[in-house]
Length: 415
Image (tube, rainbow, N blue to C red):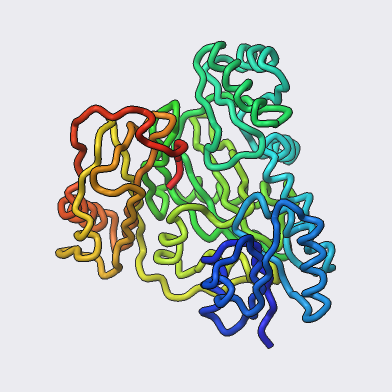
């Protein structure tokens, strides 16, 4: 008997589940398109600004035909998944409290500290004056961020008191009542994707990330598997288990961030969802695990079974620039690459068209303007294939004046 799964937003998750025979899908989404209506077994148009009404709609659907699990890959909706789990009295899935423990980064840090998991020194501040005092206490430079943001959204690197005050004021101006100030750490950034089911943590994937310089910390690339020695990898897996237990996450998945500093490991964010960007493509190619299926099985209280991986290694590269200008590249080459050694087709995506304006990596509206994901048999093979891809894409920057206003988007630090 197929399990009936409610998906809160996220068309990709629905598509992945519909490719299987083990699930009936209830798809809750706002302003559903005809394609989305036809995709789900049971489409449910909702208003995600009114969680009480959503809960009533889901309860009615559950009464007509019981729902077995609630899943979502949208972080702001994870607490709603916990609310619905309780409303429907489901035996598995994330709790609302665990979701909020992860989303509130100050709460995360506090719980990890209590559990003996090392984190960056930090302060919660409610005014710009408190922010300046906290920065002086922690010692400049510091990082100022919203308590409820992830993947560096809203993060500011500050090396002077005036910038700290402004960063805190900017966060408070969004309607938040406080901000988080952390010491600035340096070292390799390590990403972990893990599932925790029945109190047992399974580390699915460990990736060694490459992060650009301050003030924007753009993710410029990543290597899988990480090049950590076995002893450090074992330490990381233990810390992952302790961290997820500390925030109360079970029968769910999480993307965690760690940094390996000169003084040892420091835990960062715990994002209660599958990784963002194109990390899902690399996870599937190199581990055989489809992240959406892992998340669904975890919410059902079950461990996932992988397919045979296509490759042993993965390489990720963001399309970034050191200066502003207009991008030029060969858009047809992405679909007709030749001479690659790996049998796994690369994933190539641009956020801009040839002739569009781009800004430098450190600009508030700069960041990553595209991404290239490769999988293959060895790191050396991937580097050679990457060089081949770049040669055929012929990405270059036309050196001409570009105004800040010509790029109409928020800075993106993620892949």
